[in-house]
Image (cartoon, rainbow, N blue to C red; front, side):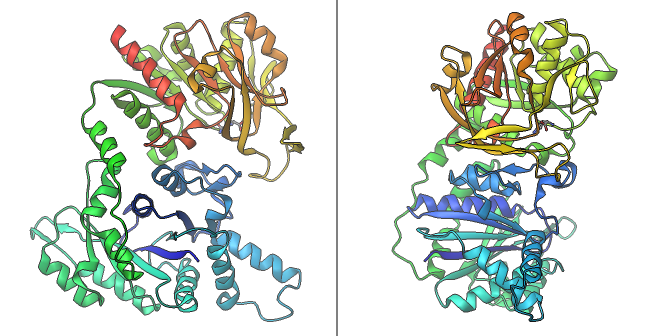
Length: 542
Ligand code: GLN
């Protein structure tokens, strides 16, 4: 049976618990273990699908079509293990399942309570789908002491009891702040946070302490004394120059060794971290730099485009260049001359998005890229903007638009109500539940032999993840092709355009899916590798 490692957080949020969990997963994997990561989110939304990116950052979509927390993106990027629906749950979903069961009489008339019914539902979720794993890492969202988080903490406390010795480990991530005025690190917040954890019955096995300064040995001993653990289990997690160094740094301070000791394992093979060392070397020694403009709507909140910025960095790794991102609010192109913002960039990317605001600005950015021969990458809504731009300015279809916004004269982007997945017809209707009406998850596409994308992928069948309602209207495909924009990827049934490109342009590709979700530092996505390569070529021209 899989051993369980629970990762909780204390003192403050945003300490990078997701990244820490992901890096530990990668580290155990580098020792030859089979791992999977899972996230328990205490908020009441049933899933993050309907939450604003301004509030919650990106929605990470899995192959099996779940809309999940962005930490699952970290997990995938660090371990290469594709996340599944069964890897993320919220209080909202747990409670709705409990209530549904109650309504169906599933509790046989008993009083339904947080303990044991909600906690049982959480435990069931944690233990499901873990066959063949050596370690399951389970991150609890939020920080200890949050009211909403209590049932999760209680459930993992129970699991420790249920499963017996040697099956579970608790890691608590805390902050050791450095107080400038005193010139010292302070351990008190950590002591308090652990006290809180112990009050609900959880004794951490390991403290992972985020800090900007090395923790003196005396302080480690003191923390250990107050928090009831050995000094070597108080592990410093120093701020680092690049996230890709985290697995290496954790190994250097003994995190994996100590975790394995908690499970009574002391003869594990040393991890092979050469691939991570290679990535770090590339990050630290780029041979050049390219500037990419990302023209979007949620640019104030960088987490809204987490996978995207990571994927662009991976494209840089593959080309040995640093990728500098200019985040530009598309609305500026509705006010000012776009050229001033885009004059010096080597590539323009319009990412996914929803709704009307800023769309005319995005269309302006596409026009600039197309006319000025700047490499252009459109993702999902970015593809829609590119098609609208081409329809209006190449094919002369005045009033071309998307039915997502009003009722355009030429609906070059429209709602598809039916499509085929495998052998099954799936459908949606325009008035369905929010979150229930999207085309979600992995779908195959067939690429046109000889097209640029077929060359980029080195394949003619691909699978990519989707999250959208609207599609390119095939009724306009012939007209667009006549004016230089081709469909170069189709759904296998030939009904839905998946990729459009302009063959006469140095690099102009729009995709209906989200390739950024599948890019990994150890395996950069071919589209991002190729886009950055085109930007490198552009940078040599200007
Ligand atoms: N708003 C568009 C749609 O729903 C695009 C979605 C996206 O970019 N993810 O089809």
